[in-house]
Amino acid sequence: MKNKFLFIPFFLLFENICQAQELPSIQTDRPDQTECPFITPKGYFQLENGFSYEVKTKNSSEITAPTILTKYGINDHFEFRLITEYSIESENSKNISGISPMAIGFKTKLWQEKGIIPTTSLIGHLHFPKIASAVLKTNYYAPAFRFTMQHTLTKKQTLSYNLGAEWDGITAEPAFIYTLTTGYSFSEKISGYVEFYGFIPQINKPDHRFDAGLNYLFNPNHQLDLSGGFGLSATSPDYFVSLGYSFRFKI
Image (cartoon, rainbow, N blue to C red; front, side, top):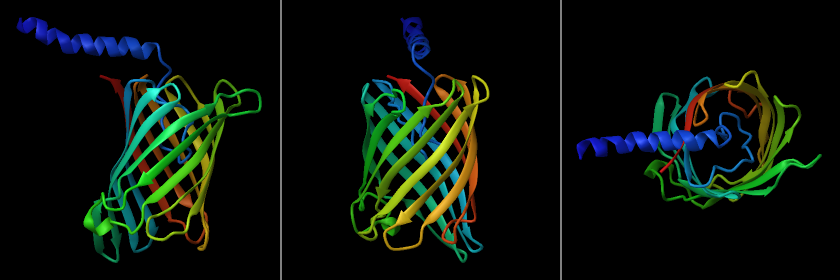
């Protein structure tokens, strides 16, 4: 009887591997800021985990460790999303740390690529101001949305871009979002990207940035990423780096 129970985990692992072979490789929304239009496969959980270090000014920095985007595929056109982050902000040797307001959201596929029409999805989130550490609670619910689009240029290269807006929960003014990136597959396991993106507040000055990164695909269900970038405007951070690990599984 014990041998039969010990066999069960190995059977489930083998079943997941077989199912993964029937699916395309994992598609993630990290490490770039351009979210992808693809939906997590039905019945799969996907966790995209990251660590980032950002130097805002000479005396100001922020560590996010970890940031976790959890996805669950509802069907071929819809996924559920949950974002949790733990951050440590340092300014003039004073630290503020805790869990940022949690966000719940969705991604829904609108249409598939056809000719000049890109594969397009809509992503929406709502940050809850009180589901956070006391020092990081905000005044308002903070919605965010973006349209995410992707063109296939060649078998190895894509062109992707996002347009949307987000609120910070502190004020009622939105910041508009834009991203533009091109990705290239160097091999079956290694791919990279370069990207321009930015935030354009309704009142304050815009924040434009550049970044680049690499992905390494261990197998269809597991991916490692490394990225970094720098600011292009006076309000942008000096530089930032990020390391991440993403995986998916089916229960």
